[in-house]
Length: 103
View 1 (cartoon, rainbow, N blue to C red):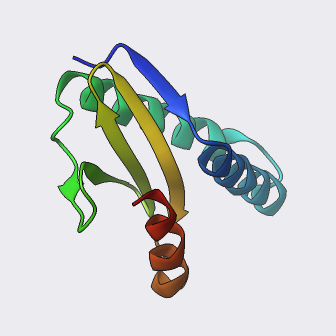
View 2: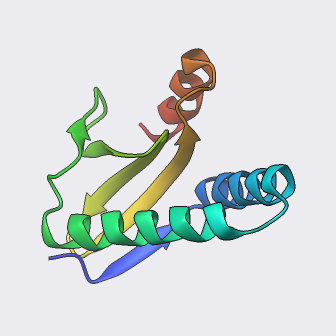
């Protein structure tokens, strides 16, 4: 069971950028707050069931889909590393380039 969750700087920055975009677009933080809850719910599930996400071509790297976003993570013993937080509407080639950094 996962006891600790660690966001990489990249993943955390991506998440904050998404929140800032929606806060500005909507003129409020309500969507960002709902998304934060969905993210936390997904993390809680992954902590209990680390193999929950979809396998990738990279060893031990999985993807959990949350609305239009991908939570890309790796579990190592009792720690979950969130590698990327990706808006799935972006260019998938950019995601491929970023995810390869975690091989």
